[in-house]
Structure formats: C-alpha cells, structure tokens
Length: 171
Length: 203
Image (cartoon, rainbow over all chains, first blue to last red; front, side, top):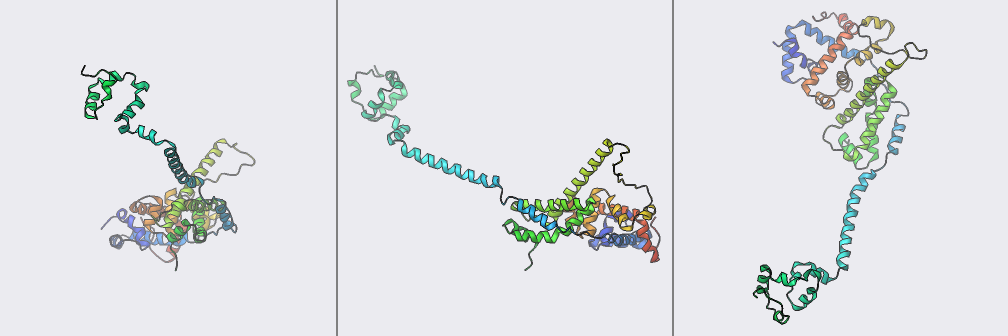
C-alpha cells in the first residue's frame, strides 16, 4: 500500500472524479487502510462545500458599455501593419518603372557599347570610333601585348594596319 | 448551429464584431469573478477584465487556434492579476516605508495575521469574509490554481496550460493549497463533518 504522501497527488483528482484508473485504484487501496486520509477526504469535500458559500459577483451595469467604447476607440487596423507591405509594393513598382524608363531613354548604341562583345573592334568603323579615345593613346603599346596579338590573329585580317605604318609586334 | 469559442474568435479575426460581443457576454462574468477573487477588489477586477478583452481584441489578427480559447483568455487574466497584485504589494511597501507613523488621514494597513486563531476571526467577521481571506492568503500560484479548479471547474490540462506547469506539478500544487485551506478553515470545515458523526481529525 502506498503512503499518505504518495497518494496525495492523486487525492484531489480522486475527489473531483478526474483521476485516471491507476490513481483511483491507488487512492482506494490507501483509503481502505488509512483512517486519517479517509477523514481528510471528508474534510476536503466539506471544504469544497464551504468554499461555495462565497457568492459570485456580477460585472457592474456599465461594464459592457465601457468595453464597447474601448473597443470602438481601437484603430480598425494597424497603420504600421498596413503601411509595411504597401511600402514594399510601392518601392518594387517604382524601381520597375525607373528601370523601364531608363532602358527606354538610353540609346541603343550606348547599350551596345556596354556589352563586352561590342568592345572588341571587329570592323574599321568601330576601330575609328574608339582609336582617338584617351585611354587608347598608347595603342601601340597595347598592341604589343601577347594577348592582343593573339586576338588580332584570330580575328579578321586588317589590311589597313600596314598602311597606317604602325609597328607590329613582330618588328 | 452553436459555434465554438475558437470559431467565434476566428470570426472576430475575419472582422465580425458581433462574435467578439458574443465572447464578451459569455466570459465577462467568469472573468470578473476570477479576477475579483485574485485581486480582492471589484473595481480593479473589472478594469483588469476589460484589459483582458481589449488584449484579445487587439490580438485578433494574429490569433491562431493552437489552444483552447479559455486557456488563452485566463492565461492573460492570470498574468494581469499577478502583476496587479505584485504592483499593489510594492506600492503598499512603499507607503509603509514613506508614510508618517501615525498620520491622521492614513488608512489602517490591511495586513494578514496568520497567527490569529480562526475562531477569533469569526467573532468579528462573517464566514464568507473568512473564506475569502483564507483563499487570498494562499501563495499566488496556489490561489490561481484553486480558483480555476474550484470556481471555474477547469480540468487539469487546461489549468496546467494557464499556469505554465506540468499536470503532476499542478496536482501537487492543488493538494498543498487545499490542505492549507482545510487547516485554516478547520472550524468551518469540521463542523458539518462532526455533525454527521464522522471520524475525527487526521493525525
């Protein structure tokens, strides 16, 4: 048989009829041999009856009205919560519009210049367009780089190169 | 068809104000009673009950039915009540330190007197007040557990959820609380037992 302390956990559950079968069996076995706990059980039952003497209170007359007033004073929606997703949407839309406008206004040849394919002069016209640029002032030096030489051999032949009397890397 | 509390709350979430009003009507009395027994002041209990409902209303958009509605409701109420009791206690301690010793207009401090015999109390106070005082004198968590168990008739799983403890811990808590009340209210408790000719007090 379990001790008084052992069954104490299940005693309240036994009394309010919420004990599981194991708890109920343990308490019943203990009560059968313990007069003190049988009395305790009776006093717990009496205590619960005594506690029912405390009357319930009712909310005051104006409780509902005050509550409704406070609820009505609440904002119908959170401005921050409303703003946050809208801001994300507006920002995305603005960026999309700005990108579209920018792409529409930039001339196509400028766009072409920006592409890596357009940088390598494949025609005389393209070469003439870029040869006077400041960065290519030392074109002679640049053409002596092995990498450029190789690219020139793989690209189309440039017959006017000799006509311009430019030194070649083989000289 | 009767809608469950969870369904009502989901309807509130969807913008149905009438469902919130329904929940208010259903739980305002249990909530005010619970809070009144926790804080022992009707006006404070009503203020706290309004705060509970307001918090429920404010949280409606984030509501997810992960637990019983009453577990959520009474958990908010218990936390607010415990905070209120603690704030009030600190305020009283502040008054006791700062107030003049024998001021004309200083109200007498209501301090518990556990060493007084219960029959001495009975001479000057009625039974209900004695029972209220005995419940009030329980430690806060024991008091909340007893109120939810005895007066709100909640099961152990729900009370454990509200008080954030295990079911086993709750059963021990309840036993200790009722044992304290049984001893404190012995003159009231043993009277009907003796009248019924039952056995004497346990050893």
